Image 1: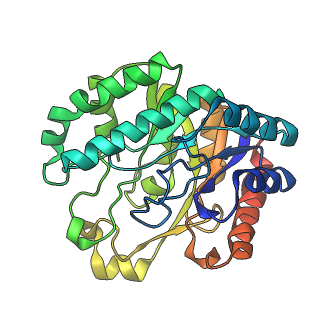
Image 2 (image 1 turned 90 degrees about the vertical axis):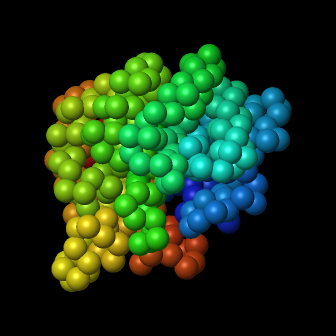
Length: 304
């Protein structure tokens, strides 16, 4: 299993600088952010380390050369919007850009595109699944035609009480994943599993790994701290508002030994991609990089 990083926390670095820093600091894979240029909608979005709108064959060759020189690989291309957005124009824009990311992955020889399932917040859980297949089946087939897998991350994308009880991502728990894979059983459709989002839902991460072993294509390494005072004041019906705190691996409540052990047990042997969203290590490039080094030192002993 290899150590990787998701690039959105370092928007100021060029792709070349990101690859060089990663290689020099023990990271073997990167997960470049591929948002449309200048389209930031939230924290950590709008980062573009590979511009898929302008990716030419020449630039693709150049990127492959940069990676080969540094002995760094791309684990997946990252684009995490809402493909089921209720606004049809926004939804079409997102889905069209997602297809461009898939094409870019094929150009670069990258096997996976990481994204969200999305969710229409104006419709309930069952209503979203009524139209899920119509939106996603063509995208999954498009990816298969290009030799690319789609890995859906399980972040609920829920940021405020205004969005309660559902955020902008449908695929957040085993019930949702089972329905998702019943509707689209295609072999190139799976999960980018992030254990931090299981912690605050009180879902057993090793059990999830065992149950969905054949659908785990990519893994995000992010931790989560539960603020017990915040939980006391807000309660579980707040869906994490006021008590879930994203942390770097080793600084939260994920049992990394148990989690990684179970990944090995089921045969997963690809990447742990550190997703840095820890506010204690933000504000300067130096602090963000310190955060990635902490994550490296926590995870590296388990990876061989």
